[in-house]
Image 1: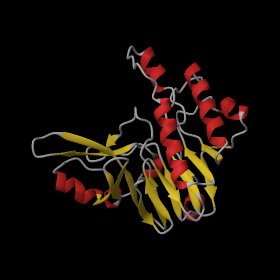
Image 2 (image 1 turned 90 degrees about the vertical axis):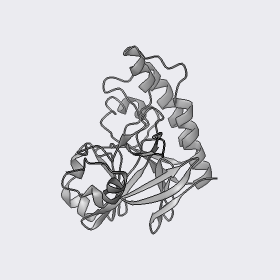
Image 3 (image 1 turned 180 degrees about the horizontal axis):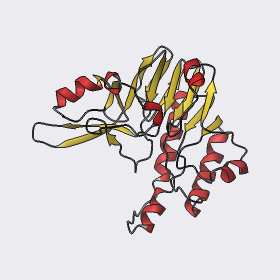
Length: 255
């Protein structure tokens, strides 16, 4: 069973992404393919590649939702430098798999240096720093987007922040869930996607003091809703971030 929750009319939060029903568009972010090889160079060995898990999650979403368009909102690959051997092999395999099922668009993320040669092999459209479908704006979030583009968007969908929330039970055990953040910015509705990569468990939004993205400067994130759509636990709206922080007893807030 695919858990899902409507964020605004016509758009649902699903595990690791959002689905825009009337446009038949699925958006996901932050795959970070090749992370294991980067860790290995740092002396950390993972015995099994995480790529098959990422691929399986995406295929599951495609099968359940049947979108016509898939937008990857940045950070397909992990290495900042030239693409590693693992990135070449796995990204090409993913593109081959996806292009038989959907029309694919990729928005550039801060980790996507040297991605263009890989995408050119399969003629995949690459958008830097944003992509627009009607009144939906897709941007990874590491770069500024022109203010007139922001103002013309009814909905903004971004990644980059890897939001997550941690809960403690009565004996102190911790459970972290990746989450969506959703709220208003001016006349637009903004949704921050969780990372689909299993190796990106997320930054706990109840403790981080500042967001990374320049797109979030001056944004009152405490007024954003915290939405968890977990493959196993289900779909939950935990209300506003500020209220949730106070409930959890945390003392550090976004400024």
